[in-house]
Image (cartoon, rainbow, N blue to C red):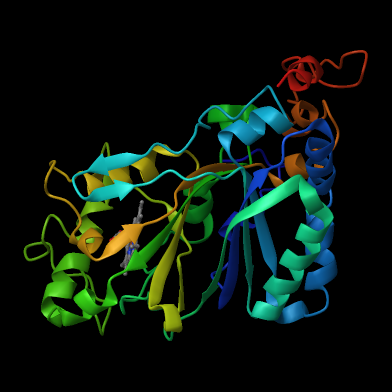
Length: 349
Ligand code: HEM
C-alpha cells in the first residue's frame, strides 16, 4: 500500500463518458526540459481551474513519463521498473513500440472539459513537446467497446484497485506512483461483424448481450478473458483498464484505445504475451485477428505529490520519500534528501 501521506494521481478515478489520450515527445534542449519541469508543478492547478467550472464534471488528468524522458528530465533516482515498451512479434501479430515521452490521460463526463484542459496544458508546453498521437474517446452505449461487448466489467474497484495499481514499499522512493501501458488498436469491423455472435462470444469469453462470463467448462483457453486472467500463487493479478472506443466513420477507422494501470508493468506485459504469443505459444487471442495495434508505450505515473515537486531540480527525492518515523531523513546542505545525487546526474542526462 502507498505511504499514508503520499497522494496518488487520479489513477483510480471512475470511468467517465469522455476521454482524451495524448502522447508527446520532448523537444531536445535544456530550455525545453525546464519548461516541462515547470509545467509538472502546474498540472494540478490546471485541473482545478478547468474542473471548477463544471463541479459535477469529474475532470481528472493522469500524467506519465516514458523511460528516456524520465532520465532526460529528472535523472536519478528512477522508478525501479521503468523501461521502454518491449515490442512483441508473433507471426502476423505485432505489439508495436512507438515513440512517446509524456502521456496525458484526461477524463471527464463531458468532452468540453477534456478539450479545454488539453488546450490549456499544451499551450503552456508550447514548443517543448510535439504531440505524436491524440485520441478522443467516447462512451459507447452501456460501456460497450467498439466490438460491441461490455468493457471494464472485471476491473478491480475501491481498495482492490488501489492494491493492484499503486506502488507501495516495494519501491518506497516512488510510493504512490503507478505504471501505465497504452496501445491504440484499429479493428476490422467488417470481419468482426461477419462472425456469428457465438463465435465472438467464444473469442471474448463472455456473452455479448448479458455480459455474463462463459462457464469455465465451455470458455475456450484462448478466449480474451482466459488469456488475460493471471494467477500468481493462487491469487489473481489484476490491472485497471479504462479503454475507450474512438473512430472516424468517413475514414472507416474504428478503434479501441487500450489503457492499463498496474503497480508494476509485469502483469500487463504478461497479458500481452499471452494475447500475442499465446498461452501455451500458438494458443493466441483471436481478437487480434480483427484488431491491429498501431501504437504502444509504457509510462511511469509519479504520485501527485512527486509530480508537483518535479518542478524543483533535486526535489524529487525529498517529495518521493516520506520521512520515516524511526529513521528521520538526513537533509544535505542544499536541502535535498540523501537519495542519489540528483543535480549532478540530471545535468549530464
Ligand atoms: C483490442 C483491444 C481490446 C478490446 C476491444 C478489449 C475488450 C475486452 C472486453 C470486452 C473484456 C470483457 C469485459 C471486462 O472484464 O472488461 C475484456 C476483459 C479484459 N481485458 Fe481486454 N480488450 C482489449 C485489449 C486488452 C489488452 C491489450 C489487455 C492487457 C494487456 C486486456 C486485458 C483485459 C483484462 C485483464 C480483462 C479482464 C479479464 C477477466 O478477468 O475476465 N485487454 N477486454
